[in-house]
Every structure is written in structure tokens, then in C-alpha cells.
Length: 266
Image 1 (tube, rainbow, N blue to C red):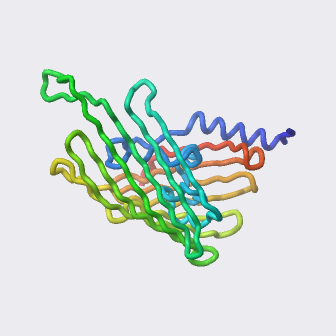
Image 2 (cartoon, helix red, strand yellow):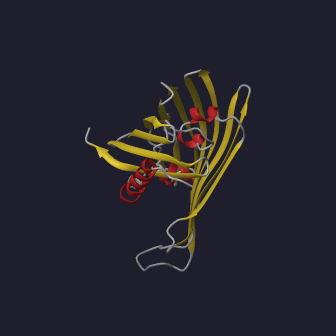
Image 3 (tube, helix red, strand yellow):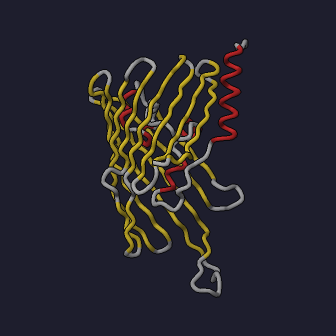
């Protein structure tokens, strides 16, 4: 297989970017932070800068408007045992979407399980028993093409969190838009947790912060996507992210890179 010099240059740059820049934004203490591990390998590899790229079943999470781009049923699954040196931390997701004449319907699940956590009743130390921490989000998504250049979608999220003997549930709502400006340029806008779902555990209520994500997807050449994005989270600074995807060989081999950890001083 002959590879032209410009392909070698593009792939080399993406690999270097992926090695040096890819990082997740440090907001681990935030409620719902478990979902920041990503939804599928493709978007995760692009630094989750996917609001304007969304064109597969992972749109259920990244931008429900993109789900209407599907022309056939898609299924996605992902499982990860986080932190190889620590037992009992498991993360995964599963999604399916199917287009109909009236729009596209999707169903997705994201979960995190942390087991075997030592119970420490007082300052004497662990008492030999353990408990677990479980979080799950279930997405029900609908997407439709409003006009040829504008797509819309929304997701209802059913959220549940249990830890030790306590548990709580809530409902969240996401809405997204995608607008095709030209064959090379698409814009995406996502309002996540629009009404701020709340979960109460042991009489303490935690609210999912509202987020706004705005991005663009630009294709300077047919085989390359560059996707810059700005993320705004309630009570936090703006975060800049960028993802890239290069089709190296037909639809079989891709090189992807992403960065999403630059706080903008605004």
C-alpha cells in the first residue's frame, strides 16, 4: 500500500499530539463526573470534542441532534476496568439507535461501579467490611432533521446513584443542534443537564451543573476532520478542546487525537 508524503506528515502530527496533549479536565469531584470517561472509543480518542462531529450512535451522549444522521441501526458497547492496579473499578456503556420515517430513536446506558471499598466507622480504622458505590445514567433520545441544514435532538436521562446503604435518583434533560454551513463546515451546540437534575443521598442533595458546549467540525480535505470546541460549565471557567480524525486507509484505519484541558481566562 503506497502512502503519500502528506499522509505521513498528517499521521505523524496526530500521533505526537495524542501522546503529548490528550488529557481529561480535572473535575473528578463533580457529581456525574463518571460520565466524563467518554462514550465510545472514537469520541474519547478525539478528546470528547465531538459536539459538531456527532454522526453515530454515540450522539446519544455527545449531541442528540447528530443521531438523525444515521441511515441504519447502530449498536455501540464499551467496557473498561479503570486503574489497572486497583481492583473493583469498572466503567462501561451500551447504546443502540434506529432511524424511522419520523426521526431517529436511541437508547443508551452509562455506568460506573466501585466495589470493595473498606468501611471505616471511626478513627480506629477499617472494621473488615466493605461497601460499593454505583452510578448509572439511562438515555432515551429522539432526533430529527428540521430542515436540510439544521438537525435537532433531545435526551431524557434517568440517573441513579447508590453508595453503601443510601441511594437516590433524578431526571435530566439534554438538547442539541447541528447546522451544516457548507460541505466542509458544520457547527454543533449542546445544552447538557439543562434543568440541572438533582439526586438526594442521606438528606444531602447534589445538583448536576448545567453545561453548554459549542463546537465546529471542519474538513480541509475529505479524509481529515478538525473539531475545536468550547465547553462552559456552571460555576467554572470556559474549557477549550480540540479533536482530530484522519482516515488513513478507506474505512478501516483511522488516526485520532484530542486535547480537552485548557482553561480559558474569561
